[in-house]
Each structure stands twice: as C-alpha cells, then as structure tokens.
Amino acid sequence: GDWSSDVCSSDLVSLLGDRSANYALTGALSADITTLDSATWVGPATGGQWFDPNNWAPTSNLSALGAVPEASNVSNVVIPANSTILFDQTAFGQVDPVNLLGFSGGSLILDQGTLTIGGSMVVDDLTLNPNGVLTVGSLSATGMLNLGADLTATNALTLNNITLTQNATLSGANINVLGTIDGAFALTLNSPGVTSINGAIGLGTALTTLTT
Image 1: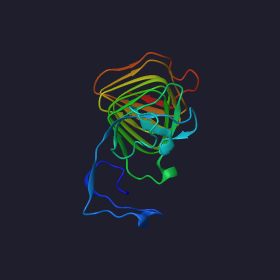
Image 2: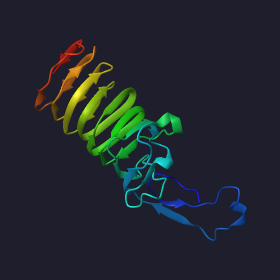
Image 3: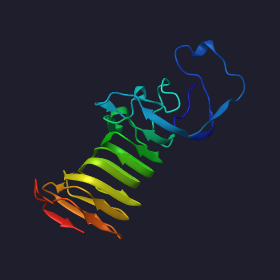
C-alpha cells in the first residue's frame, strides 16, 4: 500500500509498484497512522544517517527495520552509547521538521534541518551546525557541545564543555555550564533564571565576547 509516513487519520490506501496490477482493493479503504511510542537506533556506530530507514526499528521489535523518526510519527528515540548520528534532511529529500517528545543516549550531529524535542534531550556529544535548528524542552549534554547556531530550551540547559564554531546564543530557563567554554567567537547566555559557569572560559581559545 501507499500512504503518508506521518501521523494521520482516515488516509487513503492505494496499491503501487510493478505488481500492483495483480491485486485489487475492494471498496474505499482507509487507515489511521498513529504515533510510534519509541524508535531505537540500530544503524552503524558512526557515519549513519538519521533518515535512512535501515537505521531504525521500533524499540519493542528491533528486527523490524524502517521506523524512521520523521515529521511527528515517533514520540521518543533511543540511541545506544558510543553511536553518533548525522541528521541531514537534504540527503534524503526531507522538508518537514522532525518533532519528538524525548531523545536519550548517544551523540548527534545536527547538520541540516530542524529538530524539535518537546520534552528532555539527554545526549553525549552534540554538534549543532549553522544550518541546523534545535529547540528542546530541556537539554543535558554530558560530553562536548560544538555550537555553531543558536540553541533554545524552554526549561534548563545543563552542559559540560562548549566549543564555539560560530557566534551563538544559548537560551534557557536556567543555564548551567559544568565545564569549559572555548572558541574565537561571541557567546550570549540568555536566561531569566540562574546562569552558572563552573569551568574555565577561553583557556584553550579566547572568546571574542561573553554576554550574560
């Protein structure tokens, strides 16, 4: 059959492909596509593409490949430790933002496209490139944050080490930097709550400016 990969109700079901003439659908058939609760990364530890269907499976059935989190069809994603995923919507012709409730584990390179996480994002290393857009409910990055674009959290940002690759703004209800901040660019920390920096600033490479 053929239907939208995103969540929908009463979507039309049709037959496509080389052998579609061998079959017939009787009556007006429709189907509801509901949100998958959780998808798990089963792709390679490095170099794997987010939008490749061979790299995802339902968390409840890891042998059933094809559960690509795209648009709003998956609520949560689980990434094994020591796995790094490349998020590039242009590589697979994707245009719609990806909307999730939760993200846990592994590392992410957000190179091209838009990712919105309504709840919490817990990640090891995170790279946000200039053409990547990331909005989260809350973020905990335990490794390195390579920051090349603005990053906004509705709630708290808890970060370890930060390396700037562009001028950028971090926005959150509270911002807690546990480690160091480096990079020859300007960083703005925008928070109505508590902002704390516990490590050295510009020890490796001096920032041009730091604004809080």
